[in-house]
Image (cartoon, rainbow, N blue to C red; front, side, top):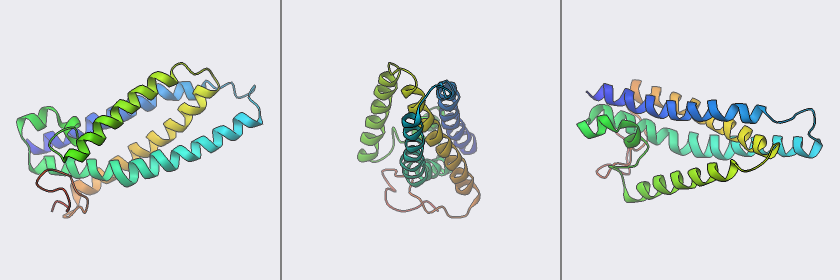
Amino acid sequence: MGMVAALWGFTGIFLLLFSAIYRLTPMALDIPFAEIGLFHWAVLVLWVLIMAYSEGYKGFQKNFSPRVAARIRYLRHHPTVVRLLLAPVFCMGFFYTTRKRKIVAFSLTTGIILLIILVHYIPQPWRGIIDAGVVVGLSWGLTSLTLFTIQAMVRDHFHHSPETPCNNTGSLK
């Protein structure tokens, strides 16, 4: 049951991120490249670099991906029926975690939903520029999540905390 829960947790999050990349890529490619000026190109390049660093590297690689991988590993060793059914939500830290992590998870999700709604009303080329940066950040995140999850599942020790109430500082062995 633990391996099924872990697999469902990873697959659910993977599909969520992949779906966002799949839906945003056409908007990013819809930029009228032949018509935009040097200023738009500069903003596009700068935005993609900012999102690669802030969302991809800092947000996913240094924070989200190792924690989710640790929670996937934890789930494999500590499955329950509720955790199995809600594995992706568990792995993202919406329940059975520290109070701080729950607040961050719900606040970040709310903020992302509001940003998605707002960006929907921005005209091209600006919407495409924003979406291009998000696609780069999410792609980095999907890659880092996959690599950290592989490490968490095959190594004897994974030195990242799953941030569960009983184990919120150390790594799960």
